[in-house]
Image 1: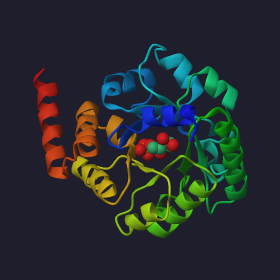
Image 2: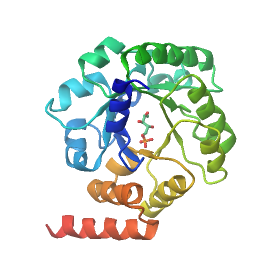
Image 3: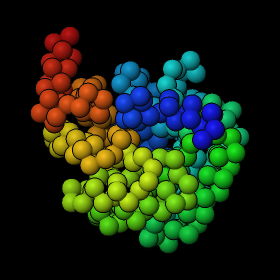
Length: 268
Ligand code: R5P
């Protein structure tokens, strides 16, 4: 692997082999998502706990201080919206690799929609992106997207989509966690896997359980958005998840980190 690629990957994946990415890219098809109306304000208190942040060029340019000391994962696919839910899988490339370099991105991310009408188009888009990014030593993160079909998130589907992403040349794969058979997803994918959270769930312990179990089964970390920043105590969530990822905390220990941070926030 070339020096540039290795250097960028080492900024994303930490020395312990783990990673906590916080995405704030949701507006690229959802518009002003709850608690992400002002993405710069949402992410600011979370930056100390993130190993990298994922976002689009528009939010990067307009909402993030260019002196920020965090690697940027630039989302370069899109072109669809919630106003046409049936066509969410019809994404194209919305940002060039040249622009990613200009913005000093550490990696780029693109969605692939395996099993949807847009499968062929999005897989070819991703393969082309890999070709170009490899020329410049820029890691690609494939996002195994399900659009509005959240029920697709079972081991068989996730293993299929993750393996295809790796076969096409992804350096990192972002997929979902599933309770049954997640180890099959990891075992069948020869590149590092991070998990997304999906829509916010009611209990923080549920999130800690997913993250812990995913790590035990071989994921290197998370690319977790709404279950951090839509929570009433986002910093406490970020710290607790960081403890699982980088300090091998159990879900119970993570809950303690959460409660302590929440108490400090409330009493401060
Ligand atoms: C989808 O909107 C984006 O690709 C997100 O970055 C990804 O789904 C992870 O965010 P969340 O944990 O909120 O699902």
